[in-house]
Amino acid sequence: MEYKVTLSTEEIVRGLKHYRRIAKQDVLRAPETPNPEVFRLHAEARREVYAKLAEVAENEGPDAVVSRALEMYQQLPFVTGTAEDAHPVIKGQENALENFFLMIGLDPKIRREARKARKPIE
Image 1 (cartoon, rainbow, N blue to C red):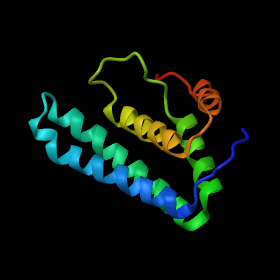
Image 2: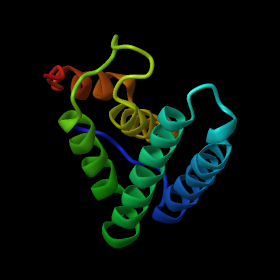
Image 3: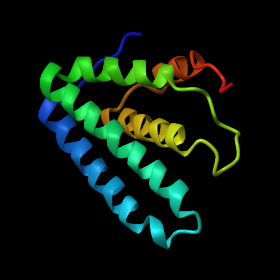
């Protein structure tokens, strides 16, 4: 898949830190939600993805982090259409990666191609 990254490493890391703070706030407010455990797992999964992507960006640069994010996305099982409270970790990871793709302005066509490569959950 071919893509063009227009953000610098610093901009990507700054954006990921912002997303991480939001996920942290969600972890803290999980007890106030109707399903605290699912909400917490979803938020923690997002935080982990943002941290991993920030580390790749800092160590390897913008192209490498986009490549890694696309790999991670393709490796996720496809869980869309499952019960709302099912698979919170996978859904959190998926949400984090999709947020990242939006942040960097990744062409939706590339994201769709990566999504098609995903296998349904077993």
